[in-house]
Amino acid sequence: ALTTLLTAKRKECRVWSASHIYSTQTRKEATMEQNSKKKRNRKNKRQKVEESKNEGLEVRGDSGNDEVPGGRKFHPRSTVKPQSLLAGLSVDEKCDLIAELSELILEDPTKAFQSERATGVSKKTNSTDGEEETEVRLPSKMQRLLDLSRTNKNGDDEYVATLAIMSLLAIFKDILPSYRIRQQTDIERQGKISKETKALWDYERSLLTYYQQYLQVLEKAWEQDQTQPESPSRIAITSMLTLCELLKSAYHFNFRSNILSIVVRQMNNRHCDQVSEACCKAVEHVFEKDTQGEVAMETARLVAKLVKDYRGALRPGVVRTFVKLPLRVHVDEAQAAKLAAAANAKKRKRDKELAEIESELKESSGTVDKIVLARCQSETLQSVILTYFRILKSSDSKTRQDLLPAALEGLAKFSHLINIDTVVDLLDILKDLLLQVDSLPLEASLNCVLTALQTLQGPGREMQIDQKEYITPLYSQLSRICTQENGRKNTKILLQCLTAAFIKRKEYSTVRVAAFLKQILTVAMH
Image (tube, helix red, strand yellow):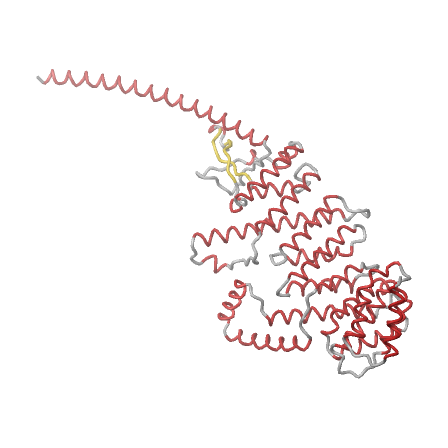
């Protein structure tokens, strides 16, 4: 029985050994087949990567410190430069790519700043390991569009760069928020925050980063063209006009000081009238639309500095932008507002936490702080009046002749807001100008008379001054209306002068009224 049992065990062992050998061979064959499948898959994926290159996608490998999902590193030798990809595309393909990227960004702005992933193949450092599958990180849609706007990355194609700049302008005008983004402190980032808040912070940080890059592209495109003395190129003009549009639509947003400094400097561009007019209109838009007054105050200071420091011929349109300021606060009222602001500042020092909460509530409510508005308008008025006085007292006859009509036009509008001390100095200057009224341009002469009359009816009404010395020069200017070519455009100013002289004030001399009536009827016949 024992012998029979041992014989059965030996047979079983031989059967198991044979089956083990068979199963081992089967596994080897299966492994070889699986490896061949992997090689085919790698080949297919390589073809897909090559197709993505042909479509103009920028393929970059991760740096040596960055890891792709799965802990595998992408070999630096597989990095593809974006210049080579964009340079290989035709102009039509680049234009199609700009349109496609713009549409995708506007469709979902939250994903416009996120890098995309594509499948690629990398080589391991150990040659025995062969190739390994990995994921290639593609730049974000916004980054690809920015690369198309740079001539050094799109194959030196200014036409494509111009289209990309205009497309980015439309995108940023659509996605920029209506509030100023505040960067979070390290303490705030380390604290506990919700998932939604973190996503919002990341989006705002990415938005600021790419917006700053876009502004740098525009500034560089403009400054590179300034080395040539002739008129600017097409891409340079497009860049400056884009900055003007951004100032109009996003003067409340971050980096407004950077845009303002560039635009204000080009208000007096002597080589391109289109650029100068666009910059002046952008500044006028800021003056009209800024309800809080802080941006208008900053802009007025920059324009005043330009007038003060500029040496040479200055365009009258630069000074005429001040007329668009909606100044309503008198100097005395502004002084009271400053005292109230100082008192509020002392309260804030006592309770800093309460002050921070109040400031955040004011920003979120969007209401106008009357104290801040009065302070800003007071400082703006001071800068404007100082600029006007600087022009009136200028020793340069050429500058004075060109800018005098614009300065007097602004003084005629804001003269009722100045204090009594400034009124005395202003009337003395106007008297000297009216002595040579016939040698001045007609517009300057009428504005000089209008400024004097409005000043005497406003802050100077307490001064017992005979207005005859201002009305007599007005009579001598009536005949110039019908003899000069530019008489029609000055008719409105003339009517304002007559209204201030005979309707807003009581004239006791019937002889003077009769003389003016006769002269007016004579002019009306022409």
